Amino acid sequence: MELSRIFEEFPAPEYRGQQEQALADIRDAFESGNDVVLARAPTGSGKSLLARAVAGCGATPGEAAAEEPIGAYYTTPQVSQLDDVSADPLLEDLSIIRGKNNYSCILPGETDTPVNQAPCVREREFDCQVKHRCPYFSDRAIAANRSIAAMTLAYFMQTAGSDVFGMRDVVVIDEAHGLGEWAEMYATIDLGPDTVPVWNDVKPPDLDDLEDAAEYADYLQTICTRGLETLRKQEELTPEEVAKRDRYTELRSDLAWFTEEYRDPESPTTWVLDQPDGDGTRVTIKPMNPERYLKHTVWDRGRTFLLLSATILNRDAFCANVGLNPSDVALVDVPHTFPVEHRPLYDVTHGKMTYEHRDETLPDIARTLVRLMAYHPDEKGLVHCHSYAIQEQLAELLSEFGVDARIRAHDRDDRDGQLEAWQRADDPEVFLSVKMEEALDLDGDLCRWQLLCKAPYPNTRDSRVERRLADGQWGWYYRTALRTVIQACGRVVRSPDDHGATYLGDTSLLDLFERARTDMPDWFREQVDRMERPTLPEFDPARATAGMGTTTFGRDRSQRSSTQDRDHPLSDVWGDG
Image 1 (cartoon, rainbow, N blue to C red):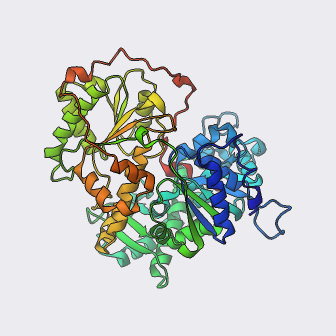
Image 2: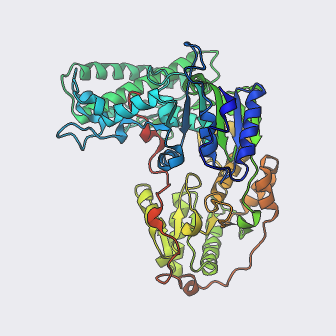
Image 3: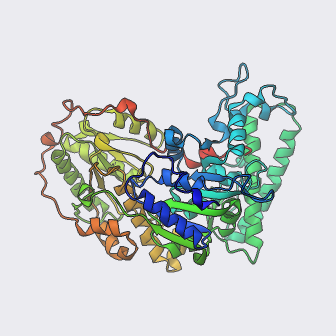
């Protein structure tokens, strides 16, 4: 790693905020002998530009011996973050590669076929005469040979062991705060009718414990092997058979990893088993703290690492969660450059939103939301509902109050389309969202205020959460919720001259701030300390909808690209690397 280049590799013509100092601090942290640097950089720090500067320090062929790694990887868990990188002219030298399903075949008659179902994967010994022009293999070859290859974290992990994407000198992971949880999600084995071919013939018995699960996994591996042998005997496969073959291959690999790890007495991986409906029903096998999985898929992929996020709240806890030695890891804090008065927090709480109190509290939150709509008659608002159940109840209450003309919501299938429609709308609509606390850029008039309906604690019915709490990991529980709150607060204030208000509807959020105070970044603690209870208009549905049909915003949205998380993170994985 050639740190002397760090400033000349910065891609923007000039620095803003604390970027120059942040690069100096990152350089000093690496020069002090740390293999991993965590950069806690809040919204607006220009994390992607910092990432590019550090990635540019990766060794070049002339600086490294023949056997030493060169170049860099840039990776992020968020598909939308990679889209932003792709659209940024300052980052045009990052060579982006995506999974095969993101590319279309160019052969005649196949232009509507994704590459992962093209003739080259359907027909045995198919010789593609235009492979050199195939968009997927072209992007892959370019990324493999350029100094900085950019990809989603899912694709990065999936290509571990690939001859194409081997070890590099530098790895930069953006939005790295949830790295442990992402790894657990990627490594989870979900067995059901939509994931296991021939499910009806291989339904599991009632699995009492992990030993039963391992024996069932052995059986499924045999089924996968037989299925693959049958498919490989065929000269040509249909797209459906290609998908089945790929699923067999993936499933067999996942099951083999589980059984190997489970039966290895020295493995640090702990597993939990879920089969809530018993005999013949879906089974989920989940790893906790999959250190060996991360070692193979991430830590063995580079010599030095920069991990960026606004919400790496506790260095030692983060290291423990992802299998790093804290003595090799430095934490660099980048100050917030947005005026605190531009990002206020307001207490509009009326009670707890836990399941047993929700029916009592939610009507009060709905009435408060109507008052907020009247307080912001010509400004768009975002409501973080936390769950679809809360979203549905809230929408029903707002309809009863007669303000549904200003409300937009989404379901699991149309979230991206509804989000784009809300962003394009000229009217001051209020969007009832679920799981949009991250990867959403609502700059300026796109959104001026938001309401958090519920403290975003992890679901205690999840077996991993239950296991951690049984082990007394309450600090992890509070940090996880606080991290989500801080991420949510960053959605509506995107630059130093932007402004947006965040309202808190659940009293459990106030309790969370007390319990997790020591893990707050200084700049967020300042927001909490300035929090006050606002004076809102009286409940008046007519006033709440008065701005509909009359408002136009003074910005050209046609120049904005959508920044939402368009796809499930795993949608960018499948390909041969």
